[in-house]
Image 1: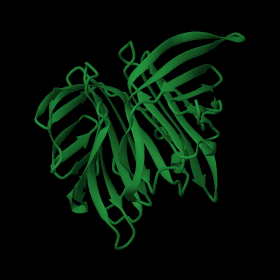
Image 2: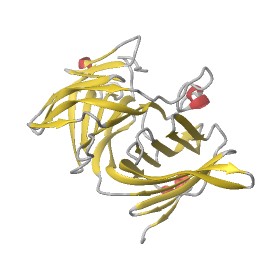
Image 3: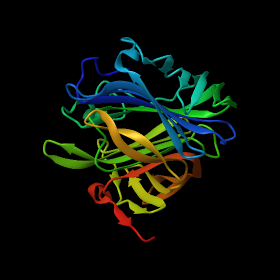
Image 4: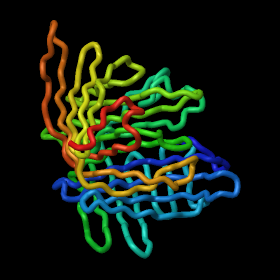
Length: 323
């Protein structure tokens, strides 16, 4: 649900809908949200569209009064566009782009929640003055419906989707984010966020890593006590390992062409980030067995989202520039 109010300052909130058709020939990120600057600064709502196949993006701006949210469920509207965990309805048009249609989502797989762990941030959700907060609405879901994109009909029926959200003042100064739910077996999804988190004049490296496998979500996070290796980053790859008491995951991600997206800076959408939507993520998943490890799954996630932003030293990564 929407966490802000209509009288916010220096605040943003946005939802990230990733949709990929059954053939994986069409992959889009659709990002509705609100942006509040300081007093007298620009405040508006928006819908941002990223086309992962040609690495392009378009920013549709609306007045702040064209944003509406339900007080009882996750349901938001921006202009004539509607968004919820059950689907989206789009009617976007400017001089460069026209998108319209309805998509419906089924068999949503949310991040597990409890009273003391309300979502992906776990107990960090209760920490005051965090720079940004992150949530995962759906690890994986089915899609039904079509969109007409610049006059072309695109059928997303049989495709897969993913939904997350962010809210706060601005994104961290450095992070690695990746996600895919297109593996050789339907129902597998992987997401990972490693970031430098400023807090009380200092900072720490936080990570939220989840694997949906055989109907169960395996969580590797700062607050669950999982340990992450030093990530290795080159111009076209990211590798790391994360381990807890019972399980481990090795990750090898490959970067591809990227599109430029608007991002929040002190609430205003004046920042710029680069994101790929056709990256690949190699996943090796292990279970501890005696003094060793037993491999449970090995696969490659395609149509993957991938962002590598900021100074990698801030998240303890080794950046190899000439590789």
